[in-house]
Each structure stands twice: as structure tokens, then as C-alpha cells.
Image (cartoon, rainbow, N blue to C red; front, side, top):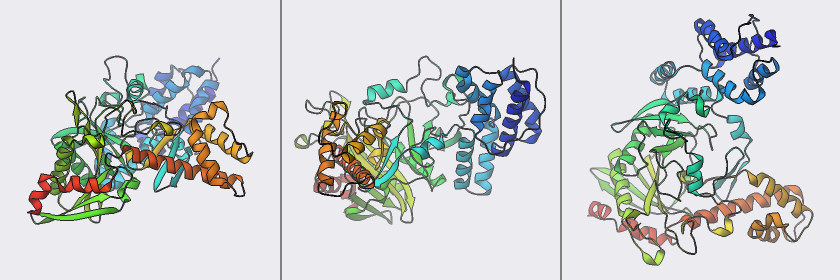
Length: 494
């Protein structure tokens, strides 16, 4: 028999929570309450005046199981539907966002939207904050305990596929409110990039602060061309406190949803955005200065700086076009093979006091007999730490390592503290890491803090070397020569 009082309290708390956290107008409280009653098939509701007191709303909703209204195996789906019901519908949310942006700023509007997505539980911020995170070797290293490990792009694509025809993929706009994929709480913000309709949504398990994706409203394949740079410019003009970039739209080098054009970005700049220049030269076009910088970065990256959006677009397209047709057999760089493109770029745009800064990473997805997963991919000796493809976020210096490492690194820690010299069979893949750790701590007084520090240092070192693996030019002089050979820049110099 259902506990009607407990069930009624749960419903009243949900409505009060929505008024206090999700912009629910008090005038709509009765309507929303009745929607919840219909959803739960609960006909014995009695007003309790129960209020939300700051507790975890999921815990309160899960009490519906104790009240006898919901089966334990249905809790996840029911919770998603309840929170979707008390979240503003898209038209109301978008109107509020637009008003806030016009009256205050785009930054405050985006902050409000992010906070709402946290409060309605679509964004799992608690999980993000719980993930181990530290700085090492100029990189940010995180261990994502919520994300499954996809060791190749084929598995990643399968993991992101939707069985059936609706929605066409995991990031189509039709997912907004779609119960079939637990998207009742998903809300999006419309965007206009170039001449196209796009939309922004936050990632439920974001890798960094306010991590989200900007998605083409039309289900169309990923592409990187001149329009890409136009779109990035349009976005940061509206949201100058965010960065926006994209993967290279090629298999094996990041981007598990290549079937649908989208960008990634958010409110936290990546380590590469702060990288210094090894070499730079200035050009002047249409009265505006264009600064071209070859970055001091383990991958191959070029930065374009200008106050002029048009200069950024044209210079970025010049690099992209030149790289798309560049060949150097000695360096294993083949631009295309059997009609399939192998070279592209991963651009990323920020706004600083210097103006627009477009960071362009040169990528190539060629394979060989020695490196069947990719010549410019993490090499096999590092697979224990990272085997997944290196996408935009990691190529910019924020590494998302697999959750299994939490337990495996804890095992290594204990073995080092015990003075063990050999690895157990289940950790044999960590031989390189193990040997380097033993060398680091040899002759030192060993305690837990020192071992943990050594492990963090080792992870940063491995991730740095993985980025070096992805570099298409191992010698920075080759990068400089490539940039200076681009016809567009030579014409400007003249």
C-alpha cells in the first residue's frame, strides 16, 4: 500500500524546488503539481506544505520508492521525467535567456543557463568535481570516473549511436526532452552561426567548467572548411568569455560523432591557449596587423592573432588549405590516400586583450604497419594510460584519462610503498610507468605523499609524450618552414 503522506511530501518538495531553483512561476505551481500526479498515476494526493530545505533533490524524489509509488528499477527514468516536468519548457527558457543577455550580458545569461542545467540535474556537476584533477608538465590531467572507455573510434561511434531512426544521433536537436534517452531535462539555446541555425547545450558529464557543444540544427556530417572559422568568430563575438573549437572531422583523431557537425567549448581556457610562441612574424593586411605564431607546444600548433575577424578567417583558411594538400613522405605525412582525406586541422578560438586568437592544430590520421591505430596517435607503450583517440580537448592539453586508472594507480601506489620490485600480472601493461616510477623514487625516503606526487608527475610526463606522438612535425623548424611557405602569407609579405 502506498504511503500517501510521504508521496505527497515528495511532490510538494519537487514543486517548491522548481520555484526556488528552476524559475517555476508560482502561478504555474498547481498545473505542474497536477502534471506530476498524472505522471505518477497518484490519485490520493493530500497537500502537506512541505518545502525544499536544501537537501539533494534526487534523494527526495527517490523516496517515492519508499512511498510505494515507483519500483526501484524505474527510479532513474521516473526521476528524469519528473525533473523534465518541473524544468521550464524551451520557449520560456529561451525567452528568459534572451532577456538576461540583453539586459545584463551574454556571460551572465550563459552562467544562469549553466546553473539551471545543474539544478535540474542534467549537468552532473558533482561527478565533475569528484574526478581527480591536477596540473603536471604544463598540462591538466583528469580522470573521468563517469565516462566509459572507448579504445578506438569505431567503438566510440558505436557507443554514441542510436538504434532506430529517431533521433538520428545522440546530439540531434530532437533529443531535447526525449524520454527514450533520459533527455527529459535537456534544454538548448538557439544560435545563428554564419547563415545557419545552430544550438548550444551543456554536456551532462563535462570535462571542464561549463563544457558544452554547439550543434548544427541540421543533421549533417562534420566538416572543417572556411565556414568553420566564420562560425567560431560569430560564436565568440556573442560569448567572448568562452572558447569554441572542433575536432578535425577525421576518424582516429578524435570526434566520436562525425555524422553530425558540431563544435566544443566552454568557460575555461585550455593550457594550449596560454602556450608561448617559439617563433612569430607580423603581416599587415588591409591596414590590420596579423601575428602568426608557431607555438611552444608538444603537438603541432599555430596561432593567428588579429583584431580583424576577416584577417583571422582568411589566415586560418590559408593554413587549413595548405595543410590539406601538404605531403612529406619522409615525415609520413600523406594528405590523402585512395581518395580519402588524411590531413585536416582542429581550430580553437578565444578572445584576449590582443584580439581574436585562433589556435590551429595540424592533424593527420595516417596508419602504418607499426602503428595501425595511427602514426600520429598515442604509441602502444602508453596505452596503459591512454589508448583512446586524442581529440580537441586533449590536443589542447586537458587530458581525460579512463576511470579504471583510479584503482590501478592505487595498486601501483601500494606496491611502491611496500617496496615491491615486480608487477603483478594484472598490471603488466604498466611496465614502462612502473620502471620510470621506480627510477624516480630510487634512493629517496618513501612515504605516501611522495609516491602520489611521483605518480602525478609520471602521468603528466606520459601525457606530454602522447602529445609529442600526435605532432605531425617533430622539429619546430619544419613548422616554421611550412607556415612561411604558404602562398597567402608570402603575398601579404610582398
